[in-house]
Amino acid sequence: MNPKLTKMIRFLAPIGLILYWLTLLKASAMPESKEGFILQSGYIKYLLGWIGIFLLALGASYLHYKWIFLKIVYHNSSEVQSLWMPWVSILALLIFELLQFRTGHFGGYIDENILISILAIMLILLVAYWSDYIRTKQAQTQLLQSKSEADLHALKAQINPHFLFNILNTVYNQASLEESPNTADMILKISDLLRFAIEDAPKNKIPLVKEILFLQNYIDLQKARLPQSPEIKLDFNWEIQPNTCAISPMLLMPLVENAFRYGISLTHPCYIQLSAKLEQQTLTFFIENSNFASGREGLGTGLQQVKERLKLEYKNHSDFCILKSDDTFSVLLKLYICS
Image: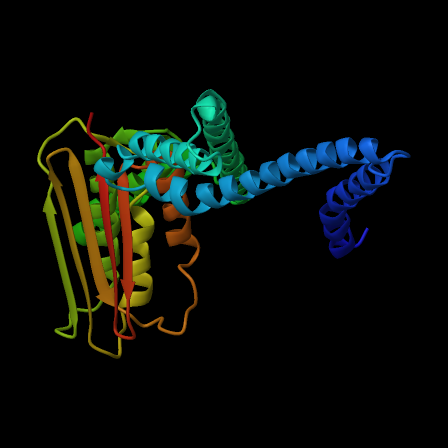
């Protein structure tokens, strides 16, 4: 079936049902006697009024979810998150006072207005948390689908790791015998990278020091392939003291890979500046580089995956900021990783 037609039917079906019910209610409001007409028309108006109020409350609840709930509950600041319950209390008070105004502040309606206010708040919270549950499930489904596709590609390109390690050890030993320390060192780093990718990457969490060592090995290999030139400026500053912190494996890798991929040129002046600092249980990771991909749209696959992983794995315990111009590209990541 045509997707547009399906969407139209899904949208028009409930509207058609409501219109059908309204037609029946209007027809039922035409009694034989005048007194009956007054009674039935008053009942119909009362019923239609409550239906209208419910639909209006439902729409307002969803707008409240989009405009207020997401901005408070998922805010990076814990101080802002703590305002959620006070806001719910204020909202309940506003609804109650609005109902009091509607009934002329008559004392006989106080209990009814309190009950309606409680029901309205319950509806608002139900819509907010249910909508958020659906949004989270959709995001998790999308992440699992992306992971399944990545696992499939990895299986298609898989090489027997023991066979590969044996080859690298053989080449390493040969390079050592031939007194080629630089070549031997590069082979050793490649071996460490592969071992990390095979043994540590599938884990949920790894020690932060392992992740940093993996990045340093990758950077050393990238520096080895670049010519010695004053036009290429590389600055890497690591302020990571011994710690017991853990991090999701290969979370930082796309940031460094992106910098070398789009920030290095062999024909133009370029630079990469990186700083990683662990302080007060927070990892601050900043990387800035020349931008030779100014025409590229979007974040790219690697950075987009980092953004999605942060949203699902760290939720409110991370701050991810990207700044780009025609000449520079920078990423700032703050991550609460220590318990």
